Length: 364
Image 1 (cartoon, helix red, strand yellow):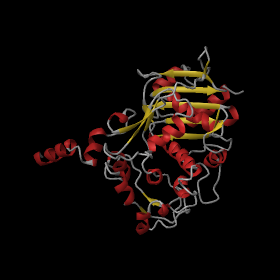
Image 2 (spheres, rainbow, N blue to C red):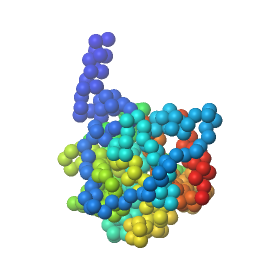
Image 3 (cartoon, rainbow, N blue to C red):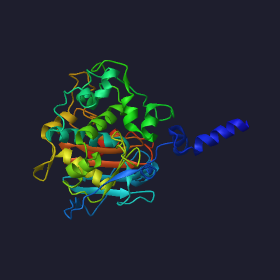
Image 4 (tube, one colour):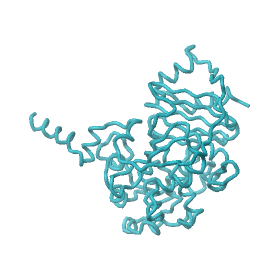
């Protein structure tokens, strides 16, 4: 028994051990940005974009149990909820000591931001095409059989990657990528279990390989600097943000997760895609990139409900950036609507159904 306790103590106190950090911090939390090194993302301009305010700030939704919408949000562990239509904040509320200024970890919503940067990198000619084999940019993966895996395969999660996405397995890939301190080394060890285009399997390793490609092509510029340049300073973000990295010195961004920002600024990313990549007359990323990222398509073996790191929940043109614990940027172009929900947990709620109900309430 003493030996078991001793081993557990070693496990919990060894800061250099991935498994130890998994055990100590387990499980993921929306304050995880505090435990990782980071790179800042700033908008040092005074040109800030503000949504118009709706003085009423109320949402008339009738719940089955007769409770208020605010009670529903509180019970579901929501910390921020925004509804924006026609550039007007129809509803904005924060809970559990969170406020407009509170930072929240994005988790996998960051995948959609990574996709945005891939689109920008193609337009800026850092990357030739989505049809390029991954091995052009990461030649070390040739020995792992990646010659037929393209950038589009990574974007669509059709690469055939052998990756354990479990968030409760301390020895799985997800824990290694989240808590580990050498993402490049871990990424170069990845292998395939299927041929590309055979099926869609959502695994974070695909997005981290996209991050490694960005890191290689940007060279001296960090991925965070590129996001700052292409998004934060272009759309008038109100607050600074950060991207968690694997280690302090020469760290690599965790592109499969871990952008840390405020709910109101996440909403602006939704607005950019709502407007087909155009921000008040300036095309930030091409309209075709936004279209291809969010369309229903299964021609190359991809899942109809998932494209370039965006979820497509229906055939109505809606699309979603989503992160674990229930982080959402929901965009409905037909309703000119953006909904941002940030939470400590999913709260046993089908959020896609909730967004549909809200669409009915705010219908034009």
